[in-house]
Length: 506
Image (tube, rainbow, N blue to C red; front, side, top):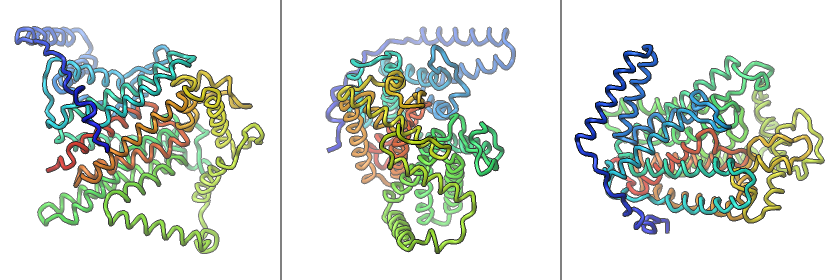
């Protein structure tokens, strides 16, 4: 059912005619580059010259192997605010330049007819190419109703970038480099977690983020806000958890020669998962925590029968505790910090009991919940008034002033519920194609999980957890921001690779 590649095989055969690059031209180009670098070294200060040479070397490597751009792009995704500037309201920096360089080099190699070092089964655009086209076709119709062409272009460009990056990774990443890409993803997540824990412990950040009577501060990393920070960690943590399970079960089967190394790897992966989880808890993001709980359950359910049994046992134990009322009578007195965390989750549950924001009295305790509900209500009204095509993809903030409720005049960029957001922006057509996109993704994912073994199984099970976290937290937020959509595109490509090569380890 989900073997989609045959639907667009003719497309994979459309290759641009080779561009002749004879040896003289290549040597002349190399000579010009070396001459320019030599002149720069003679004129520029040493730090600037070093950066220029390093940058030139990186550009040269990417031109030869476009897939190498991923190893710079992955860290730049969360750390992009440190390496970007605002031009005409659009953030441009290292992430955008690295992506553009990688895509340009990839297109140039394909135009020149240079083959990539991947198996024959990955010569086409892969099983997720058609779902991308379906979604882009659906949201493009919403342009007919747009108020701001710039906002529509920016939002559409995100998904075009996702498609392009998916194609680059799928068609260019050799399976022997999957481990290195996974390592880069985990180390980047670890760096963000370390930064967040530093902010949490040493209270480095806005006063409004202080917790527990000023003893700690909500972690926010490089994302300015705790919720998207928790969202990013949630896009790495399930992958780390799945890799930990893979290494642990491999350890149980390992012989005496490889057991010490496997034990070290298992301990390292478990440590990474623990640090990522600690940082997520330090963010005190309720939506992030709900996403993690759902994602971790998905990882354990999918990995094997043993881990699925653990989830069933935990669910049964939890149900028994609730039925016995042990949270009131049977457990020891909870400390103030833990009670505060529980209270935040209980307060969040009230979001489902409010029907009309205009009638609610706003207090310090319910401010965040009511603010979110105001944006949900505005999005519903936008969608009601523009049922089929919405107000224009990316145009929620532009149209919001006409639908603002009471004191909630700031559009905050999105509706804090991605389904409502895309319904308001792209109507029934857009949300239908979005759901079709993800249904097809999970179909391909399920086929990959069924066939994969070893490391490849850990990759797709971890990706399943990531996508579960994405959708759970997107019920309260929007994680297609600050480059996280590129992170998702990379994982989509890894899923497609495993779908085509389910046992690439062998």
